[in-house]
Length: 365
Image (cartoon, rainbow, N blue to C red):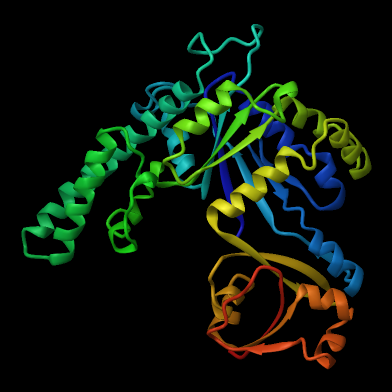
């Protein structure tokens, strides 16, 4: 399951600079494959040191990391919910992503004019929120009208859905995003098929100046305080630093550059980690002579469903899974060594796959 994140933000907040840096990151591309499939879409491989461990131990013909697709969603202006600018295309693109990366300007630069005339990250957030909320209101109102007719026939589920949707509508009209609502899984069924824009998880990227990358500033503090009631992530990044990293040719240069700034990792790495945490994702591996490969799944998936991301037949005809913890693989060096040490477990359909499992599936279709 490839992760897809949409990058949004008002003009002159650093959104395009950040996207261009991420999608042209030569340091990441030096080790793993990278491609741009459209002018505004970049596929970036997920760096994972565990792949290097397995590569060293297994010596496969190829190593295939998992990927994240970043989409630079353009066209947002005030009135996008009514089709202003590229509003309709913008909103349609957001519906397709798993998570939203909202770039917010948190730097001063008199040479870069802000659309509102002043730097105010809370205002920036609210402008985009408002456009998404207005579109969600239209979607919810339409669903309520449709279900109300069904509810009049005595349909119990329709009545319950209408009640939940009316709560959602009231919250949206009050400026509350759907992701902030404390709804049960049953309540969420009422609007699941609407793919509401404000229900999507969000990572706020506070774009700061190079000198503020460590401590942040008052703009970052204001944004952090404003979003604390949301189930979201905040990542502090300097798009200008990321642009410089993107120009470097190899990992050694990249590491030296990060050291100069006193950074342990790039903004790309921070964004990837935040995305996985926000969406509660984990990675398992398959390892053999032909290839070592990483697979992304949702935390809590059982073995058959996890096998299904490789191929539907793996899930349909699942028999068992052979599982080795990567720490044991590293210690005992080979699959046979793990087996001899009693570190290869045979798991059935109820096994919950753990982050870092090295797995081999047995199936019959």
